[in-house]
Structure formats: structure tokens, C-alpha cells
Amino acid sequence: MTDVAKRSSRAPVPSGWEYAPAPEARDIVRIEERYGLYVDGQWLEAKEHYTTISPSSEEPLAEIAQAGPEEVATAVAAAREAAENGWAEISPTERAKYLFRIARILQERSREFAVLESLNGGKPIRESRDVDLPLAAAHFFYYAGWADKLEYAFPNRRPRPVGVAGQIIPWNFPLLMLAWKIAPALAAGNTVVLKPAETTPLTALLFCDVVRQAELPPGVVNIVTGDGRTGAELVRSEVDKIAFTGSTEVGKAIQRELAGTGKRLTLELGGKAANILFDDCALDQAIEGIVNGIYFNQGHVCCAGSRLLVQESIYEQAVAKLKRRLKTLRVGDPLDKNTDVGAINSKQQLEKIRELVEAGEAEGAEIYQPPCRLPEKGYWFAPTVFTNVAQSYRIAQEEIFGPVLSVLTFRTPEEAIEKANNTPYGLSAGVWTEKGSRILWMAQRLRAGVIWANTYNRFDPSSPFGGYKESGFGREGGRHGLEPYLEFE
Ligand code: NAD
Ligand code: MN
Image 1 (cartoon, rainbow, N blue to C red):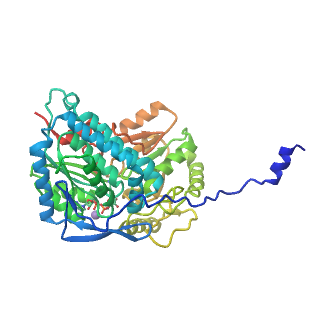
Image 2: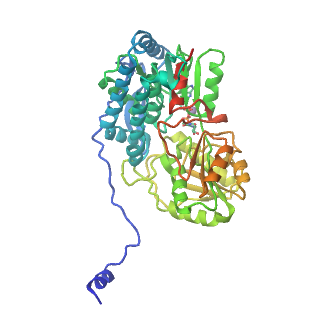
């Protein structure tokens, strides 16, 4: 026997991989005890406050202003003043410089923002660090590039800014949604009043410091915090345009409110995307895509691949592989660099997920959850797969917005299309097949704004994103994303 063989026989191959905790240091972020509203380049003290917490520990983090009608009106007036006396008149190349500056500062301070995002929102640091922050900076870089090229983006159409944009964003990608809203608005010469979601205001408030650092003229970016009441005030206020991302229910209410007012509106609402697996797909890669599609950001993703459509001939194999992969997902501390699935964003959202999962069990679907120990404090939900799902079940129809996948089957491509389109939504879809011709055939028939082929949840600022049907209207990203912020002659 050789030495090598002897040594290897003494060292058994470990049966499992145990990771030591790898927590990201928290001390890079400084959180104020109490925040005001960022209006006209200054902090405005508010009358009412509420407490924002960390959903992974329920630890209180800061007191946040609940802006009322007068405070919203003050912010809109500041934005109006800045729009009419300065920002739109500033030379487009100068405007571009401010946006480039913001992008660079976000890059420089990305670790600080990533830690704060995970702390306040519950998403794994790996995602906030590697996805949210790079994409937010990329968005500002991308739109900075358009700021002085609008005449080329829309030749012979004389683009002009709309004026003041009121922007309302959700809690699933707090800073990234801020970037999606603010970057194109500013590039097009508008000023903004943005309201972050009530559970995740902290990165938007830290962004005010970036605005100050970039020396943006006062009133160009105003941030007002508060819950839905503040959002409703912003909708009613003297803005020229509303951009909303959130639930279909609130989106519909806003559309009703704005009907006949002449204010512009774009809506990015929910989804119930189909991720479609054909029997000729590269199955192991597809399993990774499915996992990324639904467990990324705890499934708090409007374009999440929440319905898996598997071709019948590979159903058993696919489900077995998927369950095995689920066992390796690490659920826990969002600030641990090894964590795959973090905390559910809020108690309300956890209750909603629980209600729909109970409905799935009651309606007759078969539930699978890998063994995992969930922390005692905070809001948690184990990665979940439902098999034996009928199309009529609530878990196949309604947006769960949690780490819950419903598996259905199909036999022919026609049947896959019919099932995939059988939803009131139409935001995104995924197709997994070896055949390019089939990808194109499917893409022409799927009623969804974004279709990924042999990948999922890929984003790029140059690519327009938005929905069909109840997923909303208007596009964000790309040249298309400028249009809602421009008037044409
Ligand atoms: P929501 O629509 O109530 O909240 C989104 C934003 O709208 C928040 O900033 C909120 O304060 C604001 N808002 C609430 N009521 C408003 C009103 N009447 N007028 C103006 N603004 C208002 O969403 P939610 O209650 O946090 O979540 C409920 C469900 O919505 C989720 O379970 C999920 O299915 C869906 N959702 C989708 C997205 C998405 O990205 N498309 C984001 C968040 C939630
Ligand atoms: Mn709501």
C-alpha cells in the first residue's frame, strides 16, 4: 500500500457539511434614534412616529416619522419649487453628473447599505450585498447615461419632464425599488417625493445622506415616511405623476382615485409566475433556477417563480431532486454570510403566508418542508413545496409572496401555455428547454412582461420590466423606463 492510500483510509469523508456562523459586522451602520422627514434638503421634525424593527429578532431599531397631510403637502411644494426653479433648467450633462455621483457613492457605501437592508428587511446579507446594492448602483449609472441623451432616445419628439413625481414603493427590495423610481425620474428632469414602505424605511433614510453628499440641489429628492395613509396623501397631493409598486388591491384603489385627474400613473403590481420545465431541460441547472426563482428573498418577489409547471415525464425525478436540494438551504440570521433564506419581512406577511399554506393543505395539496430549526424570535417560514396542486386551489391562483412553491404538471407545450396564462397576473415566466425554437415559440405565447429562458430572476437596468393584466402597466428599466417621466410634443 502506498502512503497516500494509507492516509486517505484514516481520514473518512465527512458525511455532512457543518458551517460555523459567519456573521457580518453590524457596527458599520449608525442608526439614529429618531428620524424626521427629508424635505427640501433638510430634516423636518414630524408630529407622529412609529417604531421600525428588525424582523429577524423583533429588536426595535428606530423611531420613524408618520407623515400627515400637511407634511406631505410641504414635501410636494418643495419638489415643485425645485422642478420649476432649477432642476429641469440645469444642463442635462450637469444632471448626469449628479446621477453618476450618486451611483459612485452607493458603490463606496455598499457594505453599509447592505447591512442596513438586511437588518431592517430580513433578507440574507449575501443577497443585499451581491444583488440589491450592485443593481441599485447600476440603475443610477445606467440612467445617468441617458440624462444628456434624451433627444437621441426619443428622436424628433422633444421630450420634456413631467414635473413632480410621487413614488410609492414596497418592502421587498427597499433600496433597489428606490433606485428604479428615482434614477429615471431625475434623469428625465423631474423632482420626486418618495415614500418607502412602513416596515423598511431605513435605507431610504440613509439614501438622504447620499443625496446630501452628492450635493443635489434641495427639493429634488424628498423622502416622506409613513404607512398607507401617507401613501394615500401623496396620491391625492399636487403631484403630476404617481409611480406605484405594491399590491394589486392598493394599485386598483390608486387607479380609481386618479381617474379623471389628468395625473399620470404607472403600476407595478403582483405576479404568479410559471416556471416551466420541459423534459429535455438540463435538470440540475433547472433545479437551481427553481430554487432561485422562489426562495430568493424568502419569495418576497413580485416576479417569483411561484408555480412550477413540470412536464409529466420528468415529474418524479424533478420533485425528488428539488426536495433533496431544499434540505441544503440554510434558514436563519440574515446577517450570517452562509444564510440562504432569511426572515419574513413582517408579522402581517407571515400571517398571510400561513393562511394561504393552511388553505393549500385544507384544499388537498401535499406539503413538503425540509427539516430545519427556525429561530424562536422573529418571523420565519420554512421553505415549502406543494405537490398534488389543482389549478383551482388558492395556492395556485393567489400571490403568496413567501417561500412557497406550488407544483403542477403538463403534457404538451400547448397545455403548458394554457396553464401558465391561467392567472389574473402576467409579470414574468421561466422556460427551461434545450431547444431555442421552443423558447421562442413559448415566449410568443406567454402573456408575461418578462420571460427568462434557462435562467431566472436576472435583472439588468437596460432591460424593461413590467406587467400584463393585473400585474400593472408601464415599464421600468431601459429606454422604456424613461417614457413615463416625459411629456412629448
Ligand atoms: P401594499 O400595496 O399595501 O404596500 C405597498 C406600498 O404602498 C407601501 O409603501 C404602503 O405603505 C403603500 N400603501 C398602502 N396602502 C396605500 C394606499 N391606500 N395608498 C397609497 N399607498 C399605499 O402591500 P402590502 O400590504 O405591504 O403587501 C400585501 C401584498 O401585496 C403582499 O402579500 C404581496 O402579495 C403584494 N406585494 C407585491 C409587491 C410587488 O413588488 N409587486 C410588493 C409588496 C407587496
Ligand atoms: Mn397593504
